[in-house]
Amino acid sequence: MGVRTTALRATAALGVAVLLASCGSGGNEGGEQPSGALEGRGEVTFATGKDTSGNMQKLVDEWNAKHADEQVRIIELPESADAQRQQMVQNAQVKSDAYTILNLDVVWTAEFAANRWVVELPKDQFELDKFLEPAVKTAQYRDKLYAAPVFSDGGLLYYRKDLLDAAGVQPPKTWADLIAACQTVKAAQPAIGCYAGQFEKYEGLTVNFDEAVHSAGGDVVDATGKPVVNTPEAKAGLDALVAGFKDGVIPQKAITYKEEEGRRAFQAGELVFHRQWPYQWNLAGKTDGSSQVAGKFDVAPLPGIKGAGSSTLGGHNFAISAFGKNKATALDFIKFYIGEAAQRSNLLATSQAPTLASLYDDAELIKQFPYLPTLKESILSAKPRPQAVRYGDVTQAIQEAAYAALTGEKTSDVALKELQAKLEELIN
Image (tube, rainbow, N blue to C red):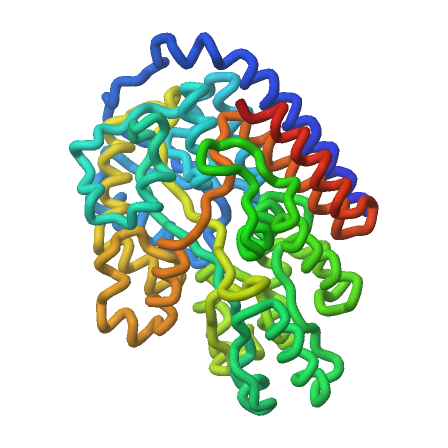
């Protein structure tokens, strides 16, 4: 309980900081960008979340071996996406040059660009037509390029193929199918949990809430960015998760799950189904004893209420801090990292989703990663999270509402009504 309380206080404090920054960004957005020129060569720092595969360091080492005078040094930030963003925002607000390259979640582009915390990148130096279009859009703000699409992401339904095959059931296409399949499996495996996603109060809950709403035919915001979350469709999506916790379809402890907690539970054989990003594929498939489900699982599209579900668009982009040193070196390193060789290396080592479209059609890669066609469709049809300059406040509001409904603190009707009012206040 103490960890959660601390996290809530940190989130609240961050919300105030972002609110103050957003209120002060109006004049800055129209003014001169600080240190905008992509000049300077020498050592650069690379602020990023935890490198669970070791391949990020491997690629940095490859760069450093060929650039003795332009070394890249990784600064590893916390595992939580919210904590990563908090440190990057704080660094930018004091105009520190501690970070040069920033590994940004795709939903942070608008906020960092509008506040002039990152510099515009030259579009003509990137072959953007070779990248997945949704990934490119996440790197842009007001039709200008402020980041480079490095990793994309789409949610997938991991499932225990061995257990479903033994029970004679097919991978589910709807939420009702999932519940029925799980009940059949549990008749022979009563101790196993049915389903989990990311339900702790952090960015992962925003993603899972968005997917539930979209998979029920609703929206959080419409095509113009106007909040439309207080609808019967959104309620149906949220209610599916609420009922899941109430009825035991989702284990109670899953309310504490982020990506890694859920991954460890799935790999330990505790779940039939798990909503997760592609990176889990390699880790769950390891045969070194770390996974109890190696060779026993597969993936399918996310299920919806009446048919196929909808993934939330995920991924990461690399941007250059407006206050960092040696921006010319940083630009060249980013070009190296989004190149085909590096993206292929990342896919092979981490099973992270590449942003180059051609890699999804590579026969050798599909042989090793048979989920690639499913993943490509997931990304191309994925729905973005609200693209707001005050995204920190927006995602906090979504998390508060969804968490209150999942834990029974509020009914879904009240939670969605209050969320609608809050989003109308935050999004202009």
